[in-house]
Length: 353
Image (cartoon, rainbow, N blue to C red; front, side):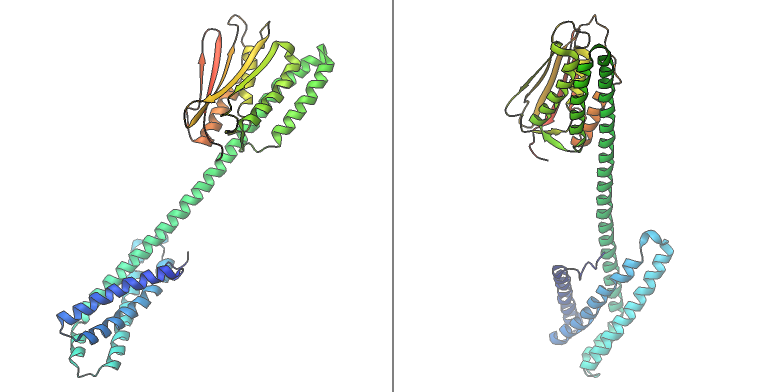
């Protein structure tokens, strides 16, 4: 930490201004209480206050190297009492020597100066204690800012690690389902299995090329979903119908990368797997209010069909990612009826972050 007074000119000027005020009080007190002429009272103030002002700058160093956290209270008090005694002794001795060199010994002013040693000591103790307190407060404030900055950096690193962990969970989850499908197609339809492998590799190459912390325009995320749908359509054929209804106001908002893919995967798993007829997977986005957009994934399912049970990773990962990125807990909800399931995603209406 640099010296708080000398590191910038403006701080030095503020320090000088404070001592000018002290000089005014000192001069007025000496002139009125001890009947000293104004000129000599001013000289007294300039010498005594000027010397202590210089000592006050030097006092920063014993304060800086006497850290409160690293010493006992007893040692700290002993150190400061010793430093204060030396400081006061030097201050008064040097100031008296300078003034006696300037004014004759017979002058009434010198008598007033000698008689006022006690209140000068008291004033010096006050100056010392005040400066020491200010220095320690400045050090505390500096350390607090450093601690807050370090904590913010650590929190950012933790968030980045959590996001990467969540992303690493999403990819295997998607791969697990896709590889199962490819395994089945190698027996029933090898050509489609080959096509699915090519599309899957292209989709994964794209997903791995992006930082999971990135935010991308919603329209680009929709294009990513369509690439994913193209992989799934090889397996389901005409049974899978994908439709997006994105308002113009939604297209440019920023959303977390790959945040929608698990929702599409979830809709396919619970709506298309056991369906016997074409089933629509729909995504809609519209303006909810001035600050938020609402994205919905409504899909119907056959309540009599055997449900496809998953690991529950998809929706949980999305909730966790949204909480980390937006610091909000209620951005993802769902509504379930007897034959329908709708996921509702609310995102802040921002184009930049």
